[in-house]
Length: 245
Image: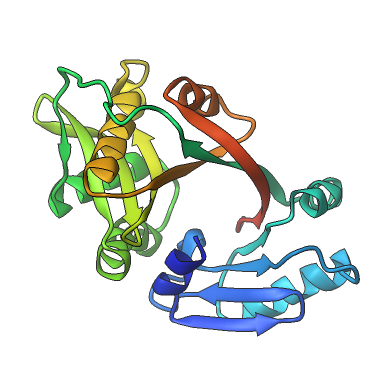
């Protein structure tokens, strides 16, 4: 994860309790612009932490604030105060694939996506959200950065000639991460997400990766689906986000 984050950042700057990872080309993409608290600093103070977030994100011209805390115990301790101050709190669980190498096949149309197919499903999923055109452009074209920087591959389900489900696959050559699983709302509950994740797992294993993982919301239902697919929880971390508006 650290390798991927640094590969996608054009500004990596240490700060008192960790490191900032920003990308000036994509200031509206949260996953490319955040602060990370490294370890569990004994002197960490939430008022100073939030003030640092305001300063560092503000100086970069961001309209959001995003702080990731790796240490689960520290994150759990900070969560109530962040919530009280109006921040969104996500508990994220890292899950490693422990299933067999023979991933069951499906009769659905699941395949690796072209850039155009991927941009199409991103645009359709964002169309209903009240975002300005520049934010939408960045959220769509960030996939091109991921492909350049970390060799990302993208898999999807096609129904009626349209891409309706997708998932990313990132790799450093030995370790693979599945990310950004997306199914358009009208095509949910058809097993498409499961099939696309399975195809990404199959691609990772067949290309020689010895460790495959994903990150799930600890409080959302997909985590249970991933368990049934053979993913095992390894640990948790916290993401504290203050979105604009």
